Length: 155
Image 1: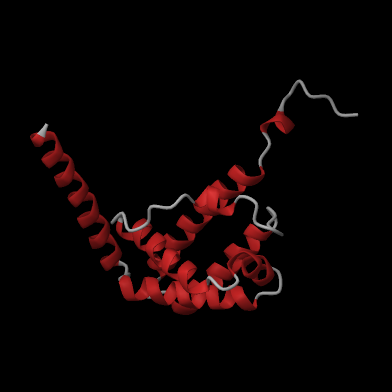
Image 2: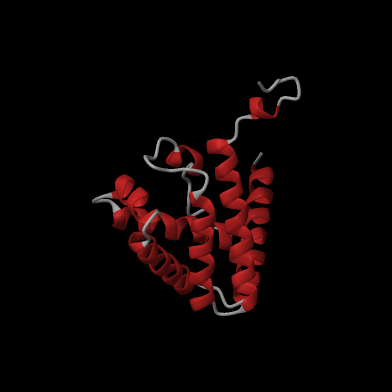
């Protein structure tokens, strides 16, 4: 059992080291993660459609959310386990949230990366990751498989 635990710890350390090396290669470090989150969510707050939805959920809790998002992106980029939340559950029941907001979120994210990403590879990596996250959240929150049922008839 002890040997299995040591092997797992070594495996996880290898994953983290590989991720950190890849991020370093494209110019990503913890300072960039902080800047990305601060810049992006500053823009979200002033966005005409996204701002009110986020403010409705986060009023008085923005600093906590910003720290959570820094842990989230650090965990995604560096595979360091810094984030232990449940993104789908966190987005359930958010007033004003709709599937059509995700493309706007992605556009704003892309614009932010275009302004601050240290390399084209960093921008591409973060955008591909954000697109996967947006698709996953959209499907989890808004997709109804019954609507795709071939046996379902339309009137």
